Image (cartoon, rainbow, N blue to C red):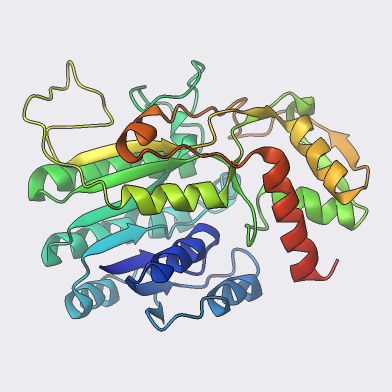
Length: 334
């Protein structure tokens, strides 16, 4: 298969590229290498991919003409779209970055798929779309109409845009709602990375909502396995589906949505304790109130994913934290 992987220098994107090339697929990876966080880390992720089946192009998905030409030149079988302006709190500070990447850039990818008859578009959504949902676990059959951040709203928009293109142009699309991803080569703006860095540097870590928060921490290896497996599960039309009786995660169009999460949320303080144990260092903690655009709990129901692929995320927090800490110490010589 010939794949386009967007966000190829990213945390999840680079790992997906590595997995796909090892399986013998031909991959074109694109990324704009922006400076939202350390570009040296992004380049290091790309440098670790030593495979003749991988080619990298520096390209911004918001560049309509460049994206259009790429699709025409390369004629992809499948697209795994992971490029996005990430971060929930940053969307409060710089909302326009989210419109450029997550809306305009995403539309450019959809148009590329439409005009070159791509066989399957797999794209990253987010657990953040569940917003104010209080019922747990979060199921893809739940309504997701009340996001609490602009980032979440753009991800919900991506799902709606995908459905439109699936309906109008018969493009098979699959959205994947990722739950709190952590592990080797992780993002420096995310809490697990921040905790490890600050504890090792002797700095104080901020604990939101006074520690009373729950997250469905999911190791990157499980995320990547789910992405690669779901690429082979191409949604088809379901002529018996109706809005009134069907799940919003499926459709009469070739459209599907899945959660990818561990399926067993843990308390934030237990996650911090696992890091402390692995580092052998007690963290200095500052407890504070819930922050804007944050949510109390995330919890994935992954029954649909298992039914479709036979895969259920399995890396537990102890093993995942051990792996992450080892990588961090090795990479940063700590």
